[in-house]
Length: 551
Ligand code: GDP
Image (tube, rainbow, N blue to C red; front, side, top):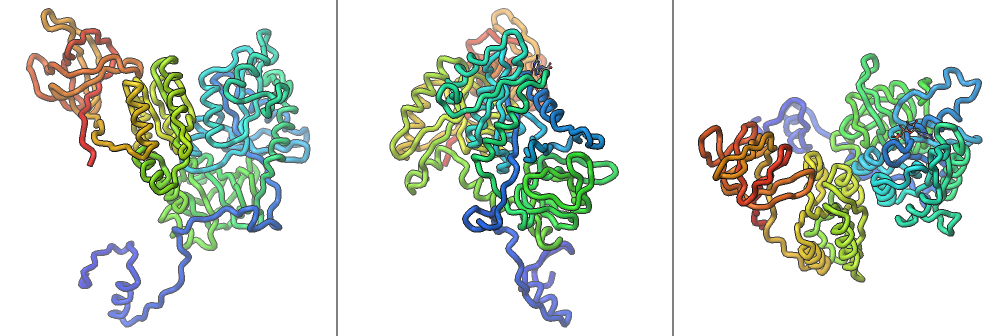
């Protein structure tokens, strides 16, 4: 304290201060070399370690529309792998499982669906090598099928199509070939390069073919890792176990993980006390492309966090203190796209691509917008529509945007409740428009590096309509509950019904009980009258906003 330095007993001092304190106490301080814990860790590349690299098993995720049979397919696949002699033989649920097929391994992520897949990616983990897209033969391509295709494509993961429910009477695999070809997945039989495998998860038909195709695609991808290096990879699942404490399922992506290893995981660290494989058996060490349960961490890590083995526990703690995925994280944050950034990028000659996710209220405007935006592609900067769909902007869109470095364009739609928070967390830019030419103008200006943002919309509050009253001479009053921020008389508002903007205008009257009031804060009920609008319905959301100048 006399040195003018207020530090708690747990705080680290810099060398200079530590030296002075030590000198005061009759000691001399020596500075030792410490490995820089913020240094980004590099996965071994094929060039640098050619001789040490060996083939590794592919990691596969199953995607597709709800009820098309993702879970059933995973079950069917696991069943083919229960060999007669295997004690118990049942795979434990640890988040991922490793199967042996014809002497080769395949790792399946247990949680199907693109939300889980993309949330891992949004955190920066590149985990999956192959996506199996499940499409029910009797139902064909559905909205989530298209979403899944776009998510997989944004991740640059090869897609194998499993045409499921072939046992159903209405099964029509050719229709699926036709539909998917519209999304760029052209079947090999039709001269394309996408593998289609007809299967029935329930009957078990075609499963072997599917597994063989996975191995074939893996072989072509030539997946390599170096078992001789210290382990690193990604957390796929975690929980607090009553008896064993924090438990994480790690997917070892490179290197070998051993009992006794010091690991840094996200912001926590630990020493591996025990390892359990996906059959629940204890193991001493595991190599690349292996999911394994790890016991011995000081805290429960988060799915999607990366782990890394360090030479000792102290170093692991240091690395964890700055975040095990730090070096990488920084890189990602910097590269996250915004339209303003694009201007800088173009000026510096960095920007080559503008990735967009387009959500619109109706099919017609969505397609018009998509077409118009794609035509904006210039020689220097290509406009790339990663995903476009109808409906409110949801969390899955934000995750995809985060993973693909895209900007989300909402046309006559709004972000869902969770999506707004997710966008803030992930640093994803959402741009909302009501008029097509405004979108085109702004994107065009951005592409030319001319975008001059002046005003930005700031949400002031939201309220949910709980009841509707007709008041003679006054009109319709929306009995509302303010959920966030506040409602102010005269503020600009829009009315949102099922994620779509139904009205835009001004908040005309505001009352609490019988009193006219100027504003009502979150947590209170009030009566809201909208200017020139009487078609309020229960369940509508009123959003108050103001335009704020951006410096
Ligand atoms: P998910 O939502 O994609 O995981 O789909 P599920 O695996 O839960 O399957 C949805 C429904 O489709 C269940 O009732 C399954 O029994 C059924 N199902 C899945 N695969 C097949 C199949 O190959 N044939 C038939 N007839 N039904 C199937």
